[in-house]
Image (cartoon, rainbow, N blue to C red; front, side):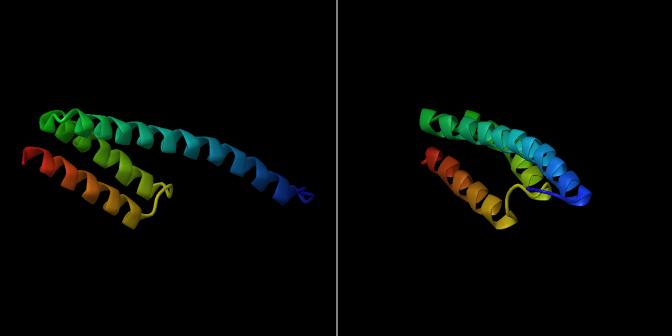
Length: 88
């Protein structure tokens, strides 16, 4: 348990940041789920639109420190590949 005033303050700050990060992570997952559902649905146009709206959210997650940039790059690359495969 935190004893010093500084440690107590840091604990309070971490709680607030955790809530914000949870909300951001949830929002990003929602966008990813929409892309996944569009891909499973087989409609390339809808999937492409969902992908375009998900991209900035994922990149924002990188700048806010929720995801590593390589993780997001990998996810975007794989989703893009699957969307392109719908055309074939």
